[in-house]
Amino acid sequence: MRHRVIHLINPKTHSLTTRPLYLNRALYSPLAGLIAVAGAIPRDRYEVVLTDENIESIDFDLKADLIGISAMTAYVNRGYEIADTFRARGVPVVMGGVHPSFMAQEALKHCDAVVIGEVELVIDKLLDDLERGEMRGTYKSEKLHPMVGLPMPRYDLIKKDRYVNRTFVQTSRGCHQGCTFCCEPLMNGLKFRYRPIDEVMREVDNCDSRMISINDSDFFGTPERPKEVMRALKGRGVHWQAGVTSKLAQDDRMLELAAASGCTLMSIGFESITRATLTSVHKHVNRPETFVSLVEKVHSYGIMVFGLFMFGFDGDDPSVFEETVKFCIDANYDACAFSVLTPYPGTLTWYDMKKANRIVSFDWTKYDQANVVYRPAQMSGDELRLGQEFAYEKFYTPSSIVRRFPVRGKRSRLQWTIYNLFMKKGSATDRKEAIAEPTEAPEVSPMPPVLPLKREWRQAVLEGTGAPGPHPA
Image: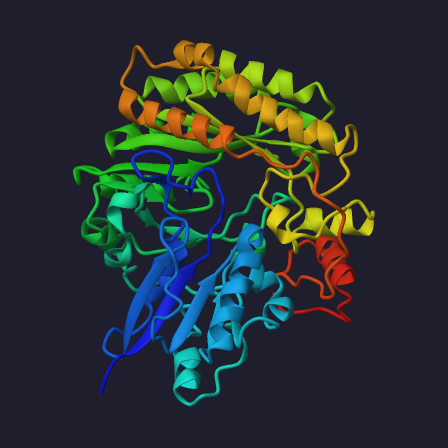
């Protein structure tokens, strides 16, 4: 009896970090979620085929028994097109990922089933239903995964020579920051769930790469757990990078362990250089007055700082672009990404803006942190989009690159150069419309997989969805 074939697809994203820009490689692989899904599929029953449309074409003629599509908001419309094409050929389709998890009823117009949130606890039922020809509707676990016994992701399915960063190891899920613009706590909860250290190290030892990205929302979320992971990483010959919050990135003992265990880069969501703005979006952990000393301290341990900033908050006026870029250059950030605030469906920012009738466009292809889909408070949409473009151009000018180049210290000059070249070229070829065209609102409302814990936030969500009463978190 032949193995049934499951074809997993990541739709094309048009992102500056996932497009092949140099030597036919993209800076990041977007496949971490799909190879985890593939790892949960029994090998003795199914053959898995994996396609990343960013680097290859989809084989619509492939004889598959099931199509699995993962999509974020910016490329969910392309996911719907792919799903419609396969369903027209009689192939069942299941969708998952962030956008279908929040907008399941919308996604079901294009597919047979939707996985809401985590897949591991529902995959067996989904596949059993597929075998019986009864796979349909939504699949959602009544509880969150305890993070024990997660299957090994299928790293063998990734085309290794097409990405600079291709190996993403998850050590935890959840984030207790609760930023109003972020989906993470509404997908995975405000409480951290940790994988056993030995299981994490087993994946590190068997992922077939000595360069890994720790795929946690906030690796430095608590004081002690990251130290346990870093102690275990020491001596393994691994070079790693991770997303961390600014507060614990100033802890010398944390940085000592990071450097000793092979850390080369920390991505930090600084978001804004204005304290009032950070407070307004519940990014309380950030203290702008410490940003310069933080970058200097991280550099002293031979670790690069990738600064993540966002424009378009209600406290931002047209002066924010020049001030932020000057700050970043003067503070000697190794690389920076500048995003436009985006009210992703289901986030608290979405409900606030929707209630105030400030969202202009509901064209999901514009929800890419570059197009402007809402009315900013203190500037025009054109000013916001062009200001973001200015920030990239200014930060990655030749004079800025020369000024910031790590002539001294232990930071990797090769890695530094790769990031600056990719970000410079990617931003220069990522031109968007100044502001997205107005569209009608979607027919269905988003429902977060995990409702907020704070009573006033939960009420805002329930009112925004038109839900009649409390829902389980």
